[in-house]
Image 1 (cartoon, rainbow, N blue to C red):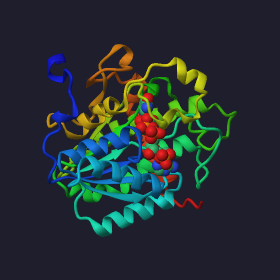
Image 2: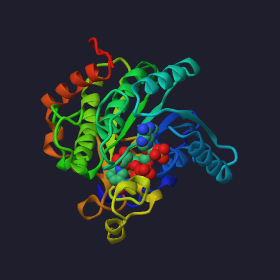
Image 3: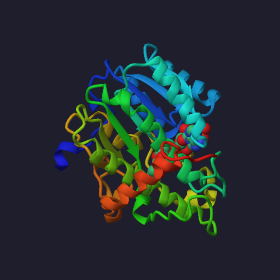
Length: 303
Ligand SMILES: NC(=O)c1ccc[n+]([C@@H]2O[C@H](COP(=O)([O-])OP(=O)(O)OC[C@H]3O[C@@H](n4cnc5c(N)ncnc54)[C@H](OP(=O)(O)O)[C@@H]3O)[C@@H](O)[C@H]2O)c1
């Protein structure tokens, strides 16, 4: 197995000419390098983010490198489920095909804050908005042959616990725990989606990944002193597990990729270790069913 994955770099990405991809949080960090890697191989890439200025900047840097790249932007604020609905609605009006949805955007350990609908920010942005986006785009993905959803989780998922009684800041605030929770929710979702696609006429493949410890803006809320003492992988390398999960032809539903070094902190992409809790199928079912309600897709929720 080691040999197959050794030093898997973005040059290994196959031709993507026929593909349309959405990458959330693509204006910077891992999302940016994922978008760049896909565009390099010909994909039509929609960079989704909340800041037009930042997205424009990202698109200009891709075009500087690759003048013929097919890249465009879409505005979505994942801290608002209405914004997710607006974005998905517009996409569905404009497109008949979606080959790849990369659920990458994220926020880590911010001060206490909630989304427009009152969910704790990390649960809302990292997980719930992506849950809703996927649900809204699943029909077009199911009608696109070999479509994939790639969910970016984290090693931090291993320390996560889903506390259904603390999704709206009901308990004393612990931003670290809430980040872990959101990243556990990401991987539980990816695995549950993989299970739920079995038996579909044209199943969408759900795959998860994580970037180890990668230099990016994600650390913006951490103490600079702590950051100074940490070792980070370069951002382009941190995007490789995502690019592999998104493009490698023999990837299987429910696979999980991360760096191959000690503790999965750094290295080249390879299969990663999933925490036992994330494999709990009952929890997967429960989180999915509750998320249908939280996201307003089922029931009578008024925000
Ligand atoms: N870097 C690491 O070591 C590491 C480790 C494990 C997992 N991850 C995961 O990797 C993913 C990418 O992170 P990164 O390291 O590339 O961080 P990053 O450089 O901070 O990028 C995060 C992206 O998410 C976007 N975003 C944040 N809040 C948003 C919102 N409300 N609406 C729309 N977009 C929003 C950001 O947009 P703005 O620029 O506008 O804020 C940015 O484009 C995240 O899911 C993160 O949890 C990263």
